[in-house]
Length: 385
Image (cartoon, rainbow, N blue to C red; front, top):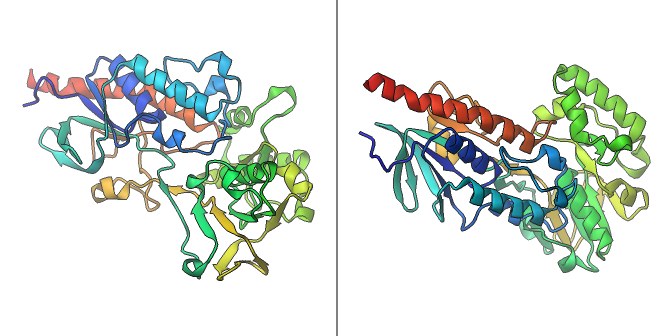
C-alpha cells in the first residue's frame, strides 16, 4: 500500500525538461519530487562555455506557465537562462533532492523502484529527464594517447583565455565547435583550425525581417522529410552560397534527414565571417594523432591543443538499459507523453532536438505529460473503489 507521504511522481533531473515536467504534474494536483544528482538546478547549463546564447528565441524557449523576462533579450545568454531556471524552480514549489543520483531504475510492486546513492525510493510514476547532452563523447582516435598536446572535450571549454597565443584545432562543425572556434580567434588564440568530416547544413541566425531559423523550422516541420531536405538545400545555396573555396563542401543531405541523424543545422553567429577572412582554417576530418601533430585527411596539423566538439550520448544505458526501452542508439524508444508498452508509468522527456527547437518541444511535451500523469494516477483509485 502506498504511504501518504510518498510522491505520486518522481522526476529525475532538474534541468529544463525535469522542471517543466514537475511543474505540470504539480499543476495537475499530483505530489511531485525531483531528484537531482548535482547540488543545484540547471547544472549542465552552468557548465557551458561563457559566450553561449540560445539559438531559439526568447518567446519560444520559455517553460510552461512562466515566460522568460523580456529584459533578457531575444537571444538568451547562458547566465540569464540559468537565472531563469533558478527562478522557475522557486516558483513551481516542487521539492528538489539535490545530491541524489539515480543509479538504477527497476519495476516494483507499486510502480517503480529507484536505487539512488542515498537509498531506495519508490513511486507509481517516474519521469526521466537527465538531459539530451549528458555524457561527453570522445572518439577513440588512433594515437591519441601518445599526443603531447592538450586534448579535451568541448564540455570542458569555458573561454579562450587558456588558449591565448596558442594554436588550436577544433574538431567538429556543430554549433559548439563553430562557436568555440569563433571565440578563440576573437579572443587572441594563435592559428585556429576546424576539422570538418561531414559538411554541415548552415543557416544564419539573424535574417531579414527578423525571421529566426526556428521560425523556418516550425513552418517546415509538417512537410515530408524529402521536401524539407530539398527546401533546405535550396535555401543554403541561395543564402549561404558556395563555400568550397574555403574548404566547406555543400552538404549531401538536407536538414530533415540530418536532424533524424541527430545533426541539427549550424546556426551562423560569426563563424562564416571568420572562415572567409582566413582566421579559421578548415581541414578534413581527423583520422589519427601523432606525438606532435594531428592527421586530418591529407593534412598534418601541429596544434598545441585540440578541442573535440564531438557531441554527447544520452547516458541512459546504465539506468534503464535492462528495461528494453531504448533504441539501438541508446535513445528512448518512446517520448513523453507516451510510455513504452513494456514500461507503463515510465516517461522520458527532453531527449529530442527537432528543428522547431528543443525547449519549445519540452514545453509542449510537458503540458501533455501533466495530463497523462494525472489520468494514470486516478486509475488505481478507480480500481480500488
